[in-house]
Image 1 (cartoon, rainbow, N blue to C red):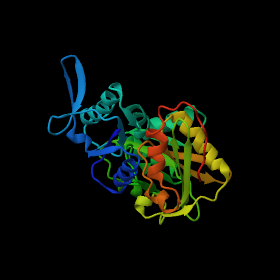
Image 2 (cartoon, rainbow, N blue to C red; image 1 turned 135 degrees about the vertical axis):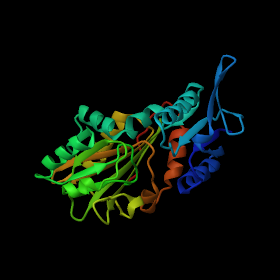
Image 3 (tube, one colour; image 1 turned 180 degrees about the vertical axis):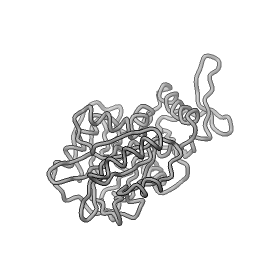
Image 4 (tube, helix red, strand yellow; image 1 turned 90 degrees about the vertical axis):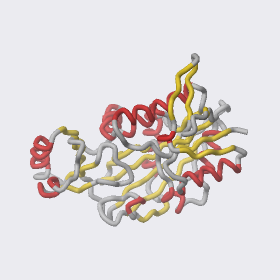
Length: 303
């Protein structure tokens, strides 16, 4: 029997979905908060211990949550994942994937470096320099401010005036701006790609926001995907660039151009599940953790 460890801050909807699907596949399951784990290096060995100082060495780890914190804390959280992987554990998604995508600036740089269309972006340190740049940009078009390490739409602000900029609550002193791409009604696309060694499952939806923010967690309405296949093709292209077993791609279309606006290495799928007949958590378990030892690849698309 394989042992699956779910790293989550709480036993919420996503972790319960993964737990139920894993149990059906004859996994034993634990749910722990990564903040309760520590690294021990002794007697020539490296291992992870839990809050009771007990060694844990699961076969598989599914990462649902990496908390914020100081630089030291975040480095240790990622090192915990690295130690598990070095000990032979199947970690999804692993520390490298999270490092690459949690930082929006690095994600955008990597997309641009691979000739993937993204909105024009500016990353600026310091209020005064950011103020001057905003003053220049908004003469031509509105811009979007996003927290560099934010998720689920939290902290995103539309800036059409200097007053909008001054109202931003930003303690990091780092400003990440993108050109605002307006859609009427406001909408974008979420594509989830789950890649195993013998199967790839793809789930997609259109998200209609109550404002300029189209995240499900912020009240967006989810609808079954009915757009052209180029949205899916672009998402597959992006998932190959980032090479993650589970990858959430957010895209927006402006006239004939398709822009990738975000990559998610710890994607939520509650909205997607509401418009899908297939069990997404089951696809995660079956594609990724039950087939890693099978080399034959068979492409299967579910939209």
